[in-house]
Length: 67
Picture 1 (tube, rainbow, N blue to C red):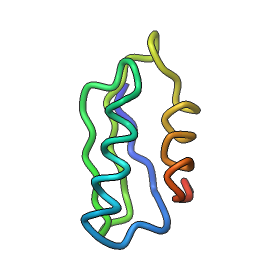
Picture 2 (spheres, one colour; picture 1 turned 90 degrees about the horizontal axis):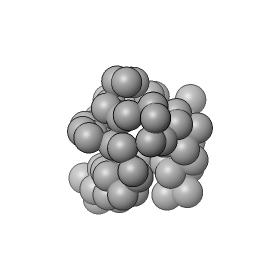
Picture 3 (spheres, rainbow, N blue to C red; picture 1 turned 180 degrees about the horizontal axis):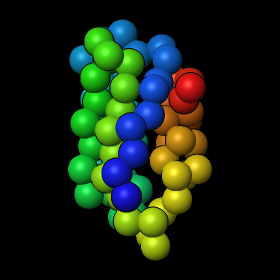
Picture 4 (tube, rainbow, N blue to C red; picture 1 turned 90 degrees about the vertical axis):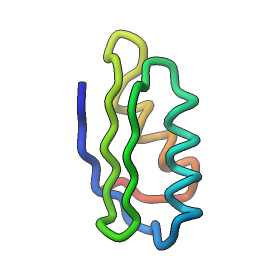
């Protein structure tokens, strides 16, 4: 499944790295693209291995808000 999430609070490349690392640690995530400038995260993941809620929670644990 490919999903595009709006994320509030990212403002620099370090924010992008934190979010990308958190998401790539999840089982089933195959691709992550993060843009602080656009405030968005695009994630490709296997719904059989992880859920959209788990993806959102990983972003929230890094201190960002999924809109």
